[in-house]
Length: 598
Image 1 (cartoon, rainbow, N blue to C red):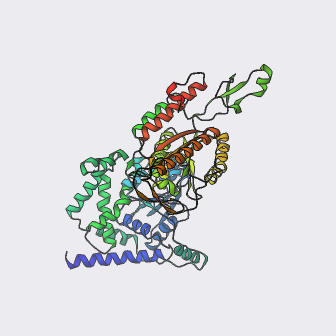
Image 2: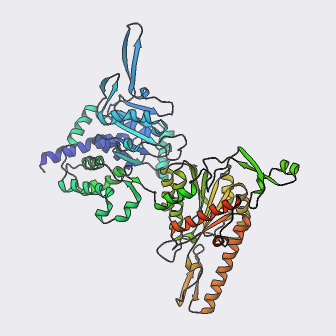
């Protein structure tokens, strides 16, 4: 590498540092986000940003436009937008008798598409041409947008009601997807001081022409062919993971990344190296950019075999296994065993001197809630699989099975207290959000004894409408949860999912063993070689099991028991089959003998 090239790259890096310095006068923190914005500008790409409101996304782009003397436009996407609101239209002038072209807000240098998923697909598609071709077509005429041109679209992850998910084809046109998080306490302290104090002045340290020159200079950066080959192999591995020694990954991927991902990996790495003062790309430049380039391009898969088999049981006929709860009266019939007494029509019963129940038309949609006990005892497992892993897989399968048919899914997380409530929404991304929350939640080293009453009481307050509720727990809790469970079952259809490990039922002969309470941390040394001790342990466990099952029956809830070594598919299907047989029995059929004991 000659000295002239090194000097030019160093000068360009210092110019980008001056731009970043001016932006940092206004924006506090968000270093990763700011760096990715500059990478997207240098690489002539576009950015998809996901984060909650109030994290300076708009302020960042607006300030950047001021530092480079560029124009800035912001579009608030709403359901009533039309494509002409973005690209422009032809307007008839009555005085001249001619049509004139009125350009839309996309004719700018930096465009912020705020909450892009609020607008319908035809409006989202209006951005496709301008993002890819840097031009728009109005009444058959093509018009170039100003250069440089950057689209930064934002999505709000906490509100999905009334939104239109971006098509995969459009998502792929964004170079990177960046997740913006909350600032630290120190950063937030500085933010408050800057906003409430005298505003800082931002100087224009570059021009759009100089920025275009930086883009052209960035494209001259050297990328070794071995790094290009690495990028190709990395993207190919998302399509055919079995060729690269990770066959198990294939079951979690529906589609891999497109060739556009490979191009953006190389372009992004070159721009990142340029920002770091180099005219050549190092391997770490490429690996640093990988998560942001691939995050939105992998179509994850929860379509396991159990989902297809569950469809026949959960949604085979219109009268479903897990039903919606209608309000339209369909018919009256005589009371039968297992009918819900709350549906008895007392006026008809009094007139005919025979109990009659109301039959309602069932709604096609339902809301399912998962009450998740993630206390320390759920992090136990004698094999490689812990109870929490079983709970996560169960939630992923059931939530995806319901969301595939447009049903809404919500969740409450308990870990010593109810600390997380995820509102009920629908869609594959929402299911992945719940699963991600479960997987990324750290294990609690120690906490107070589990009290499921808190979780059940909170659920009763959070869910005003009748819903399908799955209480997922090992039910190792302080006493007193039985009454709140029965109260919850009177308003909702409740299924208790009890997690357990075989080692909690019967101890093997291991000699002297130190046993520790997973929640309090108390320890005790026991002699598992003592046969009488093992018998007492098994007897206590059996009594506890009998008490828990009796509580379920008293509360009127169905129970699904899952061991850490169970086959999840078979367990769910057995339970679904049992519910189906019971619903047939309620309609006047008979329950097979092998299911009577279940």
